[in-house]
Image 1 (tube, rainbow, N blue to C red):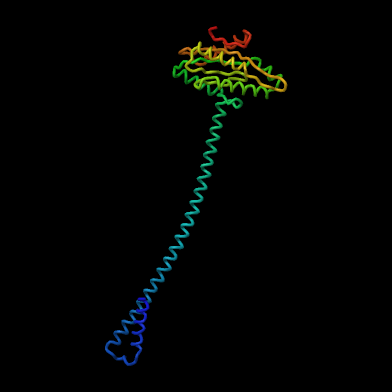
Image 2 (spheres, rainbow, N blue to C red):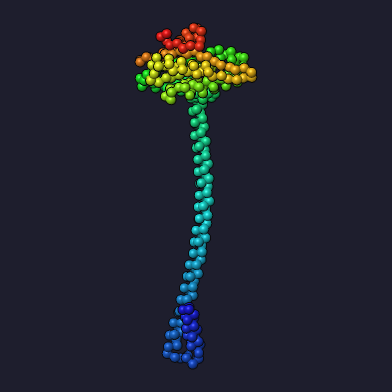
Amino acid sequence: MKDKEDDAFLAQVAALLDATEHVGHPLHDALQRLYLHHCDQQVQVQRLIDISDRYQSLAMEARQVTEQRYQRTLRRQRKLSRIADGYQALMHERNRALHQASTHDPLTGLPNRRLILERLEAFVRERRRFTLTLLDIDHFKRINDHHGHDVGDRLLVAITQTLSTTLRDYDLCARWGGEEFLLLLADTDRTEARSIVERLRSRLAAVTLRTGDQTISITVSAGLSQHRPGDPHQTTLKRADQALLKAKRAGRDRSLSDTS
């Protein structure tokens, strides 16, 4: 509304200046100069407005371009983060698998020699009481020869399940060799270990495996040795192995200790 009034007023001034009857009036020249100055100022103001509009338009375009670039960069970073997270998860899983493979038997999932020897060294350093037991499946080679290694592997897995469910949570059972298992019975003396081993032998004797029209069952021999303070774990292992050898020579299907 104000712009229309201003335009009407300027039109009126222009008309007065153009009228011949006002030529020579003392205020005519002054009003004309003022009018022309005002028109010139309007042109400059409009030019500044146009420049400002173009600048704002360019600034808006630049902002939009910057925002688009930022969003593209953000999407790339998110994609790279997902790739990096996936790679880290894969590396973690592979490291876990490598560690599992280096410390556990692939068939039974039991700790292998490396892991149980590490535990034995720790027990000796900490001066903890323990008893070692070597278990050997009697005539296992005969089972493999007559029924095949697949059946032998199935039998080993079944034996592992029985060992795992019978032993205490703080005991450790490792696969020591082909058909041998080493038990680390923590905080246990020879007498208590003998009772645990006999219970194990009884439950293992109940393990059966059906193959074709035959049912396979087993017996085990065991050698026990209580660790003596100051001895290296190798000495305790050697005594357990000697006790196992005596049990085999005595007819198998029995457990003997290194003092028997």
